[in-house]
Length: 55
Image 1 (tube, helix red, strand yellow):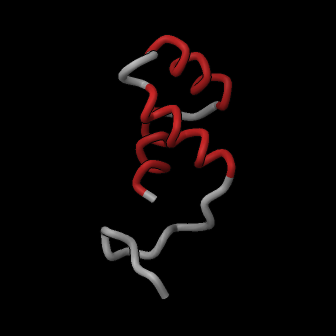
Image 2 (spheres, rainbow, N blue to C red):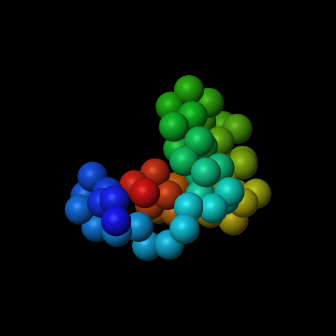
């Protein structure tokens, strides 16, 4: 089994929603307005974006 940088196994499979949240988190510095709109449309919190980016 391949470990993660944190040494913890992933909480679950990385799914398309997680991928969207990772992209949004990484885009947030450059386009905060559209990212906030997209995050709300997905029904995700800032913590959700942060957690997806940790996987």
